[in-house]
Image (cartoon, rainbow, N blue to C red; front, side, top):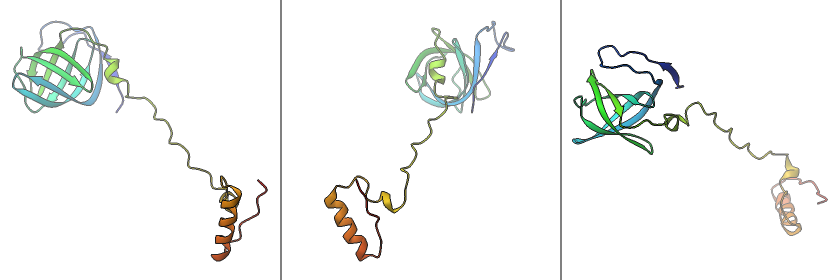
Length: 149
């Protein structure tokens, strides 16, 4: 899934205004609460907070720690409803640190070694190894080409 960035100006049903750019994502995340760790899905993130979908919803005002990979940020649950919680981070973060792997093109796999036919069978062999390979090939019915190298 890619990242969609959008700007929110107001939050219906919530106090205050938001002016931070939010990136819509779908990533695994955790919330550490006084009652234990809650697994969830990070739905969007900004420098100031995040939206987490989770089965267990702690009440608004709960002090928690947001955990995503190596990133841990102390936060407060600003609101909670319908299996979702809005987190307000205690300090601004660089949300790009969480998103660095999204949208990055994967490096193509290393190409397999090129097979150049029978002449390549003896590549990398010294003279003694080539002589043994030639003798073996005669016993199994192969005709290895002579190499000058």
